[in-house]
Every structure is written in C-alpha cells, then in structure tokens.
Amino acid sequence: MSEFNDEEEIINEDFEEDDEEFEEDVEEKMKDVGELKEILQAVSTEIPDLIKGIFGSLYSSEIAIEYGKGVGSLYKELKNQGLPEEMIRKIISDFTSNVNILGNIKVNKDRSSKELISLNSLT
Image (tube, rainbow, N blue to C red):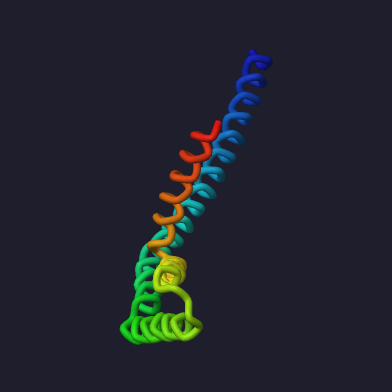
C-alpha cells in the first residue's frame, strides 16, 4: 500500500508543478495581451491624426499656390527658351504628374501595366 501512496504523491507533485507553470504562462500571456491592447489603442488614436497632418501639409492652400507659381515659372522659362508648345506641355505634364505624390502611385501602376503589355507584344 505504501508504494501506491508514494506513486500517487509523486504524480500529485508533478501535476501541481505543471499547474503552477501553466498558471504562470497564462498570467504572462495575459500581461502580453494587455500590453498589446494598450499599444493598439495608442496606434488607433495616433495614426488618424498623423495621416490628417500629412494630407493637411501636402494639400494646403499655401502649398497649392506655391505649386501653381512654380508651374507658371517653369512654363515661362521653357517658353522664353523657344521650345515648341507641344514639348512644353509634355514637360509640364511630366513635372506635375511626378509632383503629385498620391496620384503618382496609380499613374506608375498604370504605366507599368502598359509597359508590360508592350513588352509582351514584342515577343
């Protein structure tokens, strides 16, 4: 009988150790979840403000006015140098499409697709 009790006691000790380790793991994971929740809450409130700030600085009326002045100055300079109107329009068009940061993403995607199509037609 005592041999049975010893084995039962050893098994109970093993289960108690496993239970303690399990509880510690659960507590640690719960802390991690809590930290992640705090981080996500901070990010969810900060990111929208950051995006608004970026758009506000890129597309403010002051920047639009300066941009227009720059395009006008470029046009005048190219015209003064005697370039043909068609060439000036192409240069201005390329300049303005390259400056448009957000629109440029779609333009480049469209261009890449067209270039790929034209390359495929060569083979």
